[in-house]
Length: 184
Image (cartoon, rainbow, N blue to C red; front, side):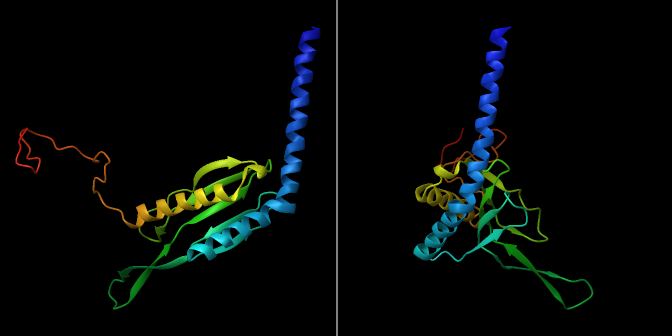
C-alpha cells in the first residue's frame, strides 16, 4: 500500500509542476513573448518586403494570438449576376501565420492558406507545432514564415505538373506512349 501512495505523490508533484508551468508560461506571454513575436514578425516584414500586417486577437485573456496577416485582395474573379450587367468581385483571403496562446500557456503555431470567398471552402488552419515560450526563437519563426511562403507559392502556382512528385492519376490501359517513343 505504501508503494501506491508513493506513485500517487509523484503524480501529484508532476501535476503541481504542470500547473506552475501554465502560470509561468502565461506570465511569460504577457511580459515578453507577445512583444517578442510582434518584434520578430515586424523584422521579417521589414527585411523581406513581405506585404503583411501584424494583428492581435485579445478577446479572451490567456488565449491571445499574434497574427502575421497577408490581408485580403481582389481575386481577379468576378461573378456575373443573373439578369443584370453587374458583377460581384470575389475576394481572396491571402493567408496568415498565427501564434496562438493555448489554455496552458504554450504557443500553437498555425498557418491558414489563401482562399477565394464564394469559390470552394477554405481549409481549416494547419497546426505546425506547439512550443513553450522559451523554445520560440527568431530562427524558428523564420522557418515558420518560410513554411507559410512555401504553402502560398504552392497554392498560387497550383497545377497538376509532376515536379518530381507521383502524379495524382496513373494511365489505365495497354501500350501507353511515354512521350519518348517507347511503348509499354
